[in-house]
Image 1: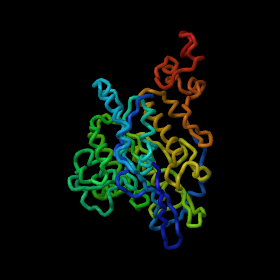
Image 2: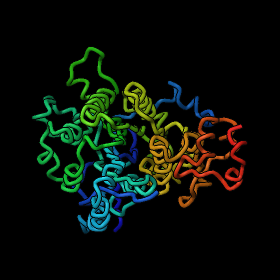
Image 3: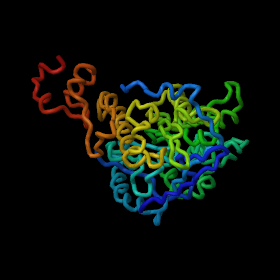
Image 4: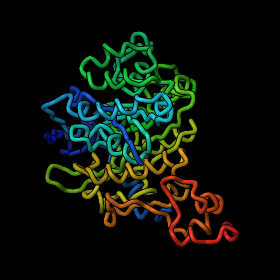
Length: 410
């Protein structure tokens, strides 16, 4: 099954811009969004002057090409995983050891669902004994829709992050909210919030496209906070922490993108083009603030701290100047897997800390190994555990294994 890509060109007052952002919500394209896994510092920015006040380009009414996922079957993925589900439920002890990962987000997490190449699906095999539940919906924002004035959860019907959280918490009517998304509804019904080990969140791009305020006033009302990026993410994370007290949170920033006009000429990038409130890079900074203030892990897709997505490599990472292509999703998945495997004790911290990916050198079939000399010199605590074989997915080399026990750690 393949995607049908429809490009919706924006007619602007002064110029016509193609902004390849997240697709608007469409009807659910796959019945199953649960995937089971049964196994196993950067350069300074050269664009400083581009991000200066003088080079900001303010454009009103930003629109984006629409990625429309088309599927002839709503149940094929679910059918392919039924046997695996049954195997995992054979033993209560095994069930207790399963790592449950729930994903909320926009099309960066939803894209690829039709053929099993979405980030959540790619992630499952990289985390031993994991189940990944993809509840991402393309085109959605973190903030409650600006037209919604009553944010009482019992009356709210919203596909935004906050609306989805209230559905998951049982405070909003999930059947009504997700009536057009039966696959997402089935996925939500298949996981108890108390059993969630990780939340992976990806929002901000559509908030930028929708001119959502980045912040509400400190003394603002709950409605104003729910209508802002920072406020909605923070309220939603707080709600999830209350229903999943043992969960770890990982937040993805919006990803770097570029803007072109109808002739294909470059206009600017995420550091330059503003919606009148801020640039997408500023929205990414706000997401970083949310992660810091709520003690969440952060996966940066904007500032080249984990991989080399920028103007000169954008065509290799992106389908349409903003959506990650398969290679881009595979790269993000590898970094995300390091984060979870570190927390789970499957890999040492240096594996997550040192894996910077250059797309020109990227091999999706490659298993990353941190240089042992670097580990020994710069990560002594991890090194001691590593040479004693304490990390299931990062076993020491034959050379290290042959070091006499008395010399290990010296």
